[in-house]
Image 1 (cartoon, rainbow, N blue to C red):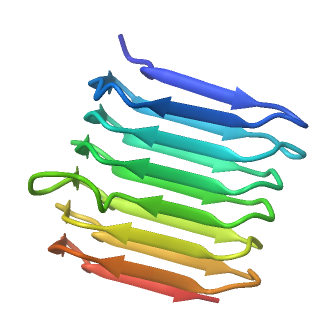
Image 2: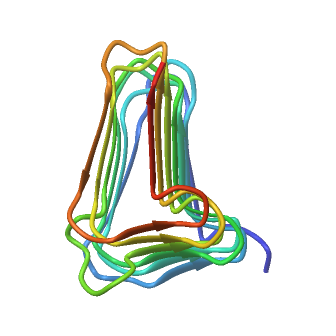
Length: 171
C-alpha cells in the first residue's frame, strides 16, 4: 500500500540480478522495480518480459559499483506520475537500457521522462527503444557526464515527448 513491488539492494562486493521470463505483471504503488548497488558493488541487471508499473517510476535502478547497469524490458513499462525507466550510473561501468523487443505500441509510457539514463563518470550510455511516450517530459533523456565514452541512442519506433522526443548529451 504505498511501497515498491520489488526493492533489491547489494552492498560492497555484491551485485543485483532480476530476471523475470514469466511475463509477470509487476505493480508498485511507488515503484514497480527498484534496484540499488552500493559503492564497491558489482553489476546490476534487470530483465522483464511482463508489464511493469509504478506511481513514481516503473523501473528505477542506480549503481555506484564497478559493473555494468543493464535494463531490458519487452513488456510495457508505465508510470502515470513519474518516470517510466530511470537508470543512474555513478560507478565505473557502462549503462544500457533496451526496450526494443517489446510488442504493441507505447512500450514505455509515463507522465515525466519515459526513459531517463544518466551516467556520471561511467563508460558510456546506450539506449535502444521502440515506442516511447512521455506526456510532460522527454521521450528519451540520455546523458553521460565526465565519462570515458559517449551516448548512443537507437530508435526503431515512434518517440514522443511533452518536452523533447530525444535529448542526448555527452558532457
